[in-house]
Length: 172
Image (cartoon, rainbow, N blue to C red; front, side, top):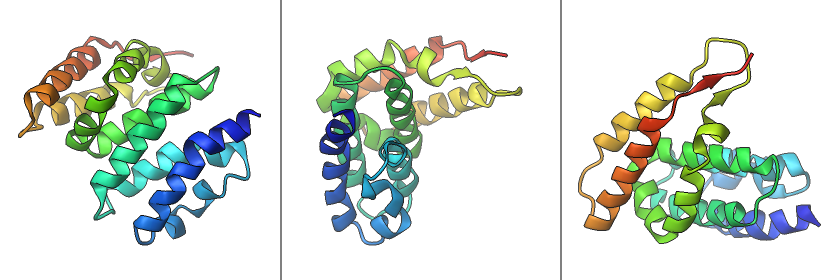
């Protein structure tokens, strides 16, 4: 049942992206098959990896944020980690695109921001953790993002404030 829910929320909407962006399905075919839970959970990373290569970045970011927002609103358990990392990957790939698309999902983004420290800034692997450097890169890219509307600037400020407050953790 969960697999069917994930497929309806993520795989089917993203199948539309595959048809609209040349080469995306070929580069990321495993993400669009929907045959295993692992493939479904990899969709956020797969989409984020292809943002930079796409000439339709706005479409990828808009649909990616929309899909992740729907997943976030209906999440449970470990899926929260994958969704949060998907948001982070899209934010890293295109800060301005992320902000532009996230304005339409501000309540969801605020909910995610309340948990992002635990979900995406806790390192469970051997040291050293790459998370402090990731945090600095994200903050710099948000600070350098220009030409935003008033609403987008407000969201950018919220993102910067929250990301700045995070203290990345290493769990041994």
